[in-house]
Length: 455
Image 1 (cartoon, rainbow, N blue to C red):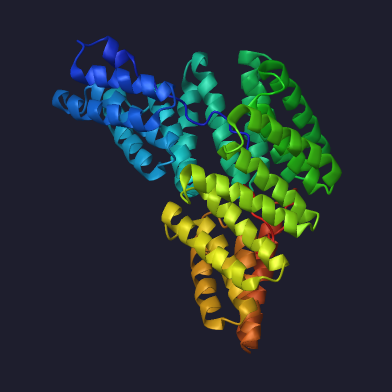
Image 2: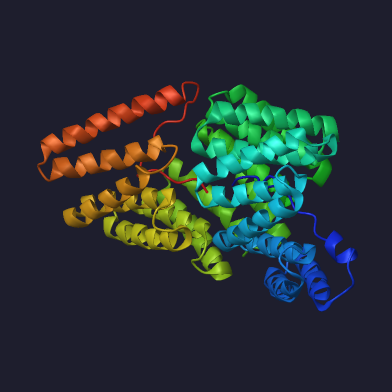
């Protein structure tokens, strides 16, 4: 479980309404804000769409139109409808560049928010310049805006972590911590959340001692500020458990996950998505302990909760589904695994599109299952499509590209195409060298299609 930082720098809305005569658009907007603050996103969306339609009569450069645009984008983002949210943020960004100029702090908030959309879509090459432009604006802005500077530093750092660019993430998080400690003091919640992210980066860099120190400090802050039974504390406990799991300390990880599960169940009920996430983490622990039957049972329970809450519409559902497929591979239930990987790939493509990194990873797993079953033609199609996606990823995701190439080499050897297999194996060595050169300080190894995907 990733302990969520404050990602969306919420844009300033109410001023436009307060400064103008109250209209039907203003009323719809105010109702939308009330619904949003209560977490009633579908209702808020209806009100904001109504406010946007009514504000059109004032013209697109009117503050009420821009406020409705940004509000609607924020609601869609909360509903994980990233493509639609990005479209509205993009429109708002273009309008505010006209009305406020290229260096206004409000523009930086929109750039940050649009950056998070592009990051969640997996479009890292588009997200990076948005974040960097926001940082440039914040760095020139008065110190009162440095709270937002820290948010964007953390967001860009998180993206670099996902990309495996750990030294760059490390540097940004150091800056963010300095800003936050100066503004809020050393024991503020925001400092605790950033420390948790910093611990995760240190872990990926192989700096295990520093990672554990940051996790302990983050835990102390969160428990002091939020209490020991808060869901954010549970999320941090899961992160610490995964840290110990990755070190092979399974006996240390288990009670942390059990405590996290208990907190989430008390806070949200036994059928909540947060509970499903911890169940998946417990299932992963059982997988590493080679207790495959119990891992299967936990994944199935998690999937049942997710399907009940939101159907098979979420990326978390698809990832848990893939991990269940990995369990089936370990149990030599290859036909079951193939069906699971095929279903997961369909869901991921529907959610993220036909060119997304996650789809490439899923197709690699599907290809391996097809090879095991002797379905060489199907495996060839899955391999070719996975490579087509992964070879276009910018910057290159070397671990998953290497994984796909190794799977394809296996297929080529199986189908007696030795010369082609040797060429692919040469590419594996080249990409591995590039990966090791890019991350000399990192201990992260190329993944395996027979291993689990993190939630």
